[in-house]
Image (cartoon, rainbow, N blue to C red):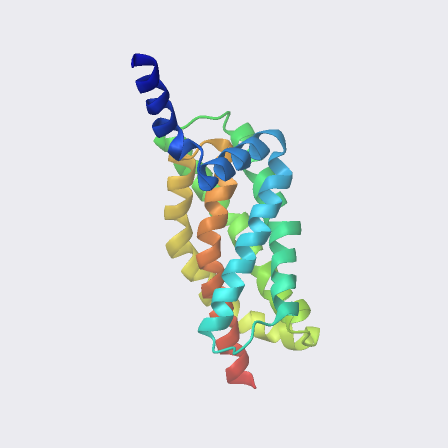
Length: 201
C-alpha cells in the first residue's frame, strides 16, 4: 500500500512537471544556458513579431503585412538580441558584477546616455527607410521631427525598466526581460511612426 501510495504521489506530483508548458520552459532554459546568444536572438525576433502584429491590428490593418512583419522580426533577431546580449556582458564587466544601488544607478545612467538614444534613432531610420521604403531625405526630416519626443518618452520609461533589470534579474535573463518590455515599447514606437506617416500622407 505504501509503495502504491508513493507511486500515486509520484504521478500526481509529476503532473505539473510533465505538462507541455513546463517541458517547453525547461527546454528553453537549457537552450539559454547552452546557446545564450542564439536563444536571445530568436526570442528577440519572435517578440518583435508579436509587437508588430499587435501594432498593426491597433493601427487598423485588416490583414497582417507579412513583409513588414518579417523586417521587424529580422531587426529584433539580427540587431536587438545580439546588441542586448553583448551590452549586458560589457556592463557587467565594467562594473564587475556589482549590484549595490550606487552601481545600479551608474549602469542605468550609462545605458540611458549611450544605448537608448542610439537604439531609438536606429529604429526610426530602419522603420522609415527599410520597412516603409521611403526616400532617405524624407526619412531624415521625419526623424528630425519625431526623434526628440520619442527619446524624451524613453527617458521617462526605460530608466525604471533598467533599474529593475539590473537589480533583480540574473545576467542570463536580462536580455529576455528587456525584450519582453521592448515588445510593448515597440508597439508604442510603431503607433507613433504610423501616426506621423498618416499626418504626412
